[in-house]
Image 1: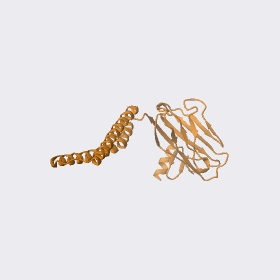
Image 2: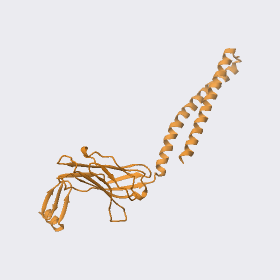
Image 3: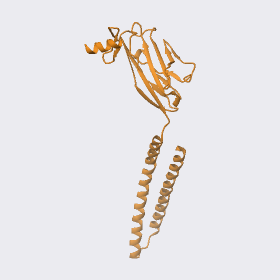
Image 4: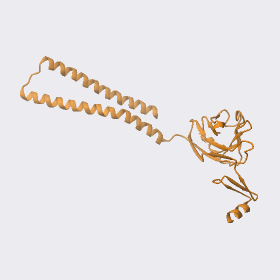
Amino acid sequence: MQQRGAAGSRGCALFPLLGVLFFQGVYIVFSLEIHADAHVRGYVGEKIKLKCTFKSTSDVTDKLTIDWTYRPPSSSRTVSIFHYQSFQYPTTAGTFRDRISWVGNVYKGDASISISNPTIKDNGTFSCAVKNPPDVHHNIPMTELTVTERGFGTMLSSVALLSILVFVPSAVVVALLLVRMGRKAAGLKKRSRSGYKKSSIEVSDDTDQEEEEACMARLCVRCAECLDSDYEETY
C-alpha cells in the first residue's frame, strides 16, 4: 500500500521488472517489452552497432514502427535519426546523414541499427521506440554511447603480439645456433689436443654446416628488420 501511495503521489511510476506502468491510479501491463544496452563503447572510425530487441504479444504486421532518436550530452532536445515501417528510413539531414544503417529483423524481434564512421561528436543518448498495434504501451530504453580514440594501450597490445610472433621463433633459432656452435667448438678443441686431422669428407661436412649456420644467422637478422619496420608503421 505504501508503494502504491508513493506512485500515486507522482502520478506515474514504472516497474520494469514487472512490466507494469502505474498511471493515474491505473496499472497498465506492458504488451510490448523493449531491451537495449545501457552503455555502448566504440572507437573513432569503426562501425558501431546499437542493439535493440523487442517482444510483442501480437504478430508483426506492416503497421509496426521503429523510431530511433538521439540527444546530445549538452542538450535536452532529441532528434530523429531513423524510422522504420515496412522499410527503413534513415535520416537524410544532420550529422548522422548517410551514416545510419538498418541491421535488424522485425520478424526476429530485432530493431538494431549501426553507425558508420563514428566520431567523438556522436557521444550522447540514443533511444529505441517500437510500436506494433495494438501493442503500443512499452518502456523506452536509453543507450549511452561513448566514442573514443584508440589509446596507447591498444597499440601497445598490438606491438606485444607482434613481438611474440617474431621474437619467440628468433630466440629458438638463436638458441639452437649457439648450442651447435658450442658443441662444434668443444669438438674442435678436443681434436686439436689429440692432433687429429680431418678427412676430405669431414671438411665438406663442416663447410655445409657453416653455410647452414650462416643462413640461420641471416634469418635472425631478417626477423629483427621486419619487427623494426612493423613497429615504425604502427606508430
